[in-house]
Image 1: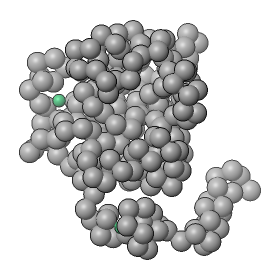
Image 2: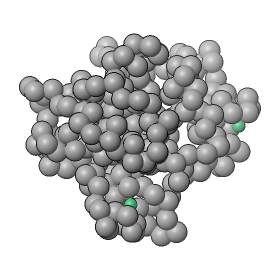
Image 3: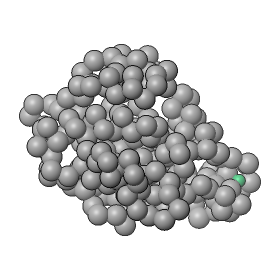
Length: 234
Ligand SMILES: [Zn+2]
Ligand SMILES: [Zn+2]
């Protein structure tokens, strides 16, 4: 049996012993997801947004900010608008390494992003080594790895490097975020980079982190960089 078959068999076995249960309200899950139909119905999909930065808009278009100063991302897709229940699920993944939350979120991302123009690789936005060490895991990778598996896109988990410890972005205003992130990323010298990649991250706030990461990839010769994120702060 190949690894994929074993994986599928294992998942079925686990599902038999632990049937899907809604991570938000505890009701029975549906569609093989840990989410009940009522909670699934209420998910805040980011259905209409700026194609460049995923800012929610009344109709899909390019927003004013992106027209003025186009980001380094060709396209940004945020599956959800950040708010309930993402403000419950993402921190469960981020601070408690809740694998069920990670599985649910990456599964929903795969459903929403599967039909997009297909990058040749997914590149998770890395945490700096010291912060990773303190917390022990990396939520962008926790989302990107199962996403890559289910969409069958190669994962390049170690081509993008954080070059210096940046202060946590949440403690800074927008200007300070940009300065904090200048040259914060580097691309490994011998990295096998294809022409089109998608960055993967959990939450997009101002987009400064993705911008810095996309710039590093472009400097390294990647001609098209998209960003796929779980949720965008509106
Ligand atoms: Zn529910
Ligand atoms: Zn925009």
